[in-house]
Length: 350
Image (tube, rainbow, N blue to C red; front, side, top):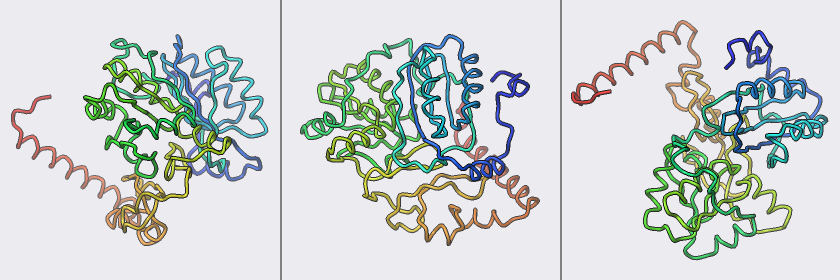
């Protein structure tokens, strides 16, 4: 980030409590949207600063990544400024006509602040893009085309999201890798599909951005019939609703904002991580030093005070001094575990 961004007023300076209070006091509604585009941006930092300035004037909130390869945005916009925002967005040559996806379930509280960051990539994938043609992507399928291909016997459906996303919702007959990140998932999927290069491959993700890169990667490795869901799960739901199609998605769609999920069907396909009851509500552990993302039912939320364990439940009742001592103790234990691993593998080198 530009070291002078603070001086220019191009960053947020308020704390979480102030931001929450300001959001709660608003008397208007917000619209949650997402969009992305792979396009070469020659000056990402200048673009970042310009967008932060312009979108601050529209009172936008959200998380936006800018890279030389394009933009990836999840944000909300005041409804009474939405049309003006879209007009302004389309006036920027790089983003003219960019497809916008509106949230399925929207309480207007998806983000607390506006964050615009320059990144090496708009999605961390670990790939050397100069090694293959990133524009040689798969065929984009509409919702009705997607449903039809689902019924083809030898079609293979692959969820290109992280395991905690697919745990609460996925398409029928989908392969759901256990990967923690997109970077880990790409080689895992390639290995899973080895020997199936001639089969119809169907890729899907939240809004389509991960499938753009994944489909090009598979085509580079010899897969002939690669297909991807146009607009991802978000736009699939819109198309299904608008056209009266059969919904083949089961459960919730995980989203990376304060909502943590939006319901696509009434099915609950996952369980509370603490008691095993049917549940698909993600929460972050109330112990901020832990902050683990996990599934917790309402009963366990009361029982454990929104923490992931009795240990973290104990921590949230500690004084600040006790918590500092606890942090030091945990850091010491982690270092001791590291020392033991190094002793067990003496030939390990950096």
